[in-house]
Amino acid sequence: MDTYQKTDGDEFLSYNTSLSFSVDTEMPLAEGENFELSVLSQEKSNARGKQFTVNPVFPKRFTGNWAFWGIDEGFAKMLTGIVEAIKPAVVLETGTNRGRSARALTEGLKNNGGGMLYTIDQVDHQIKESGAIPVDQQEYVTQIIGGTPGVFDADILHGLRGIEFAFLDGDHTAAGVAAELEYIDEHRAPNCTVLIDNCMDDAWPALREYFMDYDTYPCISLPTMTGTIMVQM
Image (cartoon, rainbow, N blue to C red; front, side):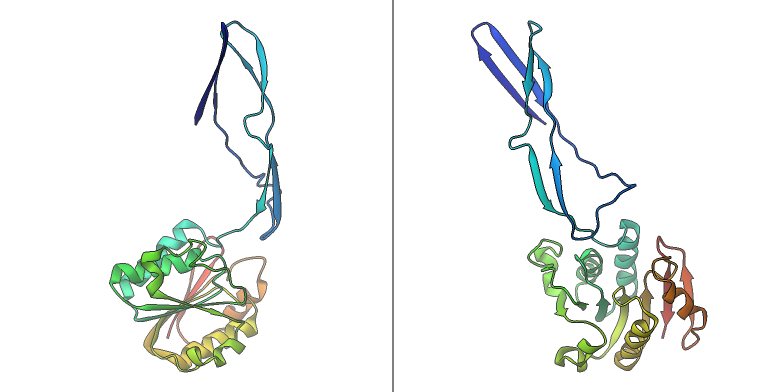
């Protein structure tokens, strides 16, 4: 909150400005959509009762780009906790997006004192430069730009071995998840835990149907915000 004062002879004006913004949850902005905010003028009175019109912000319009981090905070804490519990040397993530889940995973690796996250996305959101991954966690993450399954042919992923934990939140088609699970199976450690997000999400019915018939490895459904399947290889 900022306080402003103005004196003009025996006239005295004092007012406090506190601004907050919210988004109508009934009509949320789409990922990546530009937004504009307009700040309304305010009427303020001085000690003598005179009315003054004040623009608390000038210019009165803000523009920018709206971005979602992708997962809820409870889920992020769960990812950190799983990493701390399993203590994996190698972690794989598909669907980096803005980096919220990547930060959760690297927090766990940092707390463990070691390990590497390989995180994949088709779009480079510059998670290190944006501040999504703090400087003290950046040594635990390798960002890879490309789409699965084609990106698995890249040298850094083709030769990767020993995956102990994976979080899949990229390709939400049945064929895409099947290809990602196949890659993990071929590059995993003797024991590997895999989480697949959005498996009870109405926006991705193919995932729900895929895991209804999945029997390659034991799996359970976790009642998270969008539904998560845990596969134990």
